[in-house]
Image 1: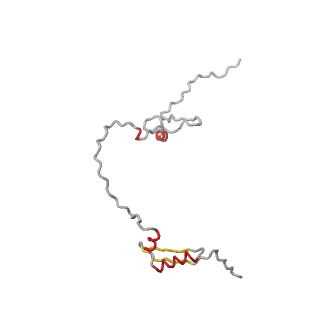
Image 2 (image 1 turned 60 degrees about the vertical axis):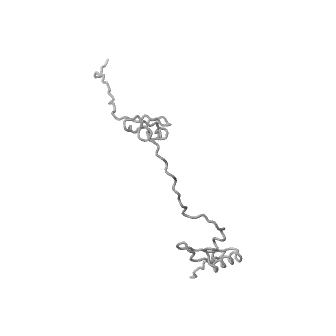
Image 3 (image 1 turned 30 degrees about the horizontal axis):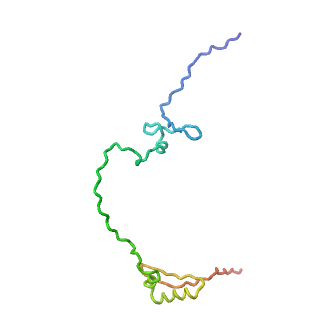
Amino acid sequence: MRRGPARREEEVLVPMSTVNRCIAIAAHGRRCQQTTYRGGPYCWHHTQSRKVWPPSRVSSRPARAAKPVAAPVEVTPLRPEPTLAPLERIARELTADQLEELAEFLEDRSFGIFRIQKADGEVVEARPEIALPYPRARRRASA
């Protein structure tokens, strides 16, 4: 019988890791590989997702004394509410000539654009624009 070299029985030591890993387990069954956050059992991501938000927390501090509530301050609206009817407001902003052009535009045309332009809160221009009901055919350059 042939004998080989004597085998030594060796203990295989697995070095213990000093790195702490997050204990969260994903849906596929594997553990999170991130290191723990501030000594807790979870990583930063899983600590955030498990956080209990402030309205639900119980505070160890004494409650603050209620301060007297001040009377509400009257706030004036930036834009005063209109008291006139819309047509009256339009008539107040446009001149007589501009109103006449608007009336003619509304009566005579079946299509078109009426442009009213303002600058610094004042109507600068109110006039109909000439617009064709179809795009113009482009002229081809003959060679």
